[in-house]
Length: 578
Image 1 (cartoon, rainbow, N blue to C red):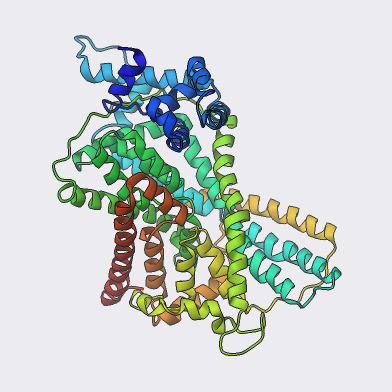
Image 2 (tube, rainbow, N blue to C red):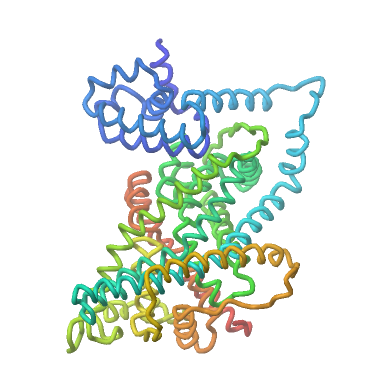
C-alpha cells in the first residue's frame, strides 16, 4: 500500500490540530477542493490541503493536469504566502513544527518516566496557568482584563473618530455637494443621512476592534492561548464535549464563517454537527460594536464588564446547550483523544502583532465599504419612500416604507422591552451583517437631527483640529490606564458626554420599556448575542452541516434569543431592577 493509499484509507483515524491560522487556510483550501469532484475522487481533501501548504512538488505537478487544479494551486500559493507573512516562517516548517509538537504531546500522554526531567521556566509557569484549580479562573481573569482594556482604553479614540466623521468629513461632503449645485437635494441627504451616518456609525468602532485584536494577538503570540485551549479542553471533556471543539469556537470569536469551516478538523460527524450548532453563540467581532454602544449608553461606569459578560454568557449558553444536546440528540456519541502542543512562552514580535491586528481590522473596514455601504444606501431609499402620501426624501422617517415594514415585528418585541420599529429595523438588517445593527440605528435615530450652526472653517483648520484632537485622545487614553484598576492619579471624575445617537437610543428604549431602559438595553444586547448570525454565516452553516441542521440552528437561536431577552426584561421588572 502506498503512502497516499494509507493516508486515504485512514483519513478518519485522527487529525492533527495545526493551530488557528493554519486551520483557517486548510479549511479555505478544502472549500476549493470540494468544488471540483475530479480532485476529490483522487485525493482526500484535508490531506491534499496540507500537502499543498507543505509545497509538495509531486502533488503540484499532478494537479496541473486536473480540472480545477490551476484554481487550487493559485489558492494554495495565496494561503502559503499569508501564513509566511503572519507567522514569519516557511509554511512547510510551520506544518512540521505542529506535527512534531503533536508527536511530543502524544509521547507525554503515553510515556511514563521513572525520573522527572528538570523543569524549564515554561514548565514552571504552566504548573500555575494550566492547573486544575487555577487554570479556568486565570483564563477568565485574562479575558476580563482584555475586554476591560478594550472598552475603557479605546473610549477616547472612539470619541475622536466620531468627532472626525460627524465634523470635518461631513462638512467636506456638504461643501463638495454645494459646489456641485446639489445642496439641499435628496443627493445631499443620501450622502449625509445615508452613507456617512450608516458607514460612519460603524467605523466609529474601529479603535475598539483594534485594541481587542491587539490584546488577543499578544496572548496568541506569547503562547498563552495554547494554554487556554488546554484548560478548556479539560473542561469540555468534563462536560461531555470534544476537546477539539475549542478550536472552531476560538475562531468564532473572530468570525463565525471560518469557525464553521474549522469544524472540519473533527473526524466524528456527530462531534462536527454538535460543535457547529454551538459555534454561533461565540460573539464574533461584528457584535462587539453593538455591545460597546449599548454598554456605554446604559452602563457607562461598567462598560468593560458588561461587554465581557456578553462574551461569557455566550460561552455559558454553549456549555449548557452542549450538555443538553449531549444527553438527548447526541446521546451515546464516542469521544476520541485530543493531543496538542504547548509551545514555549516567547516575547511577541511587533511584526506579528501588527499583521494579526491589521488583518482582522482590515477585514472589518472592507466590509464597511461593501456590505454596510450597500445596506446603508438601501435603507436610506426605504426611509425616503413615503407611505400614505408625501414626497420622496421629504417624508417623516416614521411614515416611511422602512418604518412601516419594521413595525410588523414591533409587537413581537414589546414583551422584551424594545417593541419599537427602530429596534425591529436594526435586528432585521442585522441578518445581513451584525455591524449593520449599529449603522441602522445611526440612520433611523439620526434622520431628524438638527445640525448645529458652526463657524465655517478652512480645510487646513480642519486638518489641524483632527491632529490636535487625536493628541488629546491619546493623552486621555494614558490618563485612563490607572483609572481602569481603580487608581485616580489625575484626580479627575469627568465623564464623556453622550452623543446625539446615544441620547436618542436611550430615550427610545426608556419610552418603549416604561422607564426600564437599562433592562431593555441589556435584553437587546442578549438578543443580538443569541439570535441568528449573518447570511454569509448561515450559508457556511448549510454547506458544512446540511439544510436540516441549518434550519434547526436558525429557528432554535431565534426562539432562544426571544426567550432569554424575555426572562431578563420581565424577570428584572419583577425584581425591581432597571
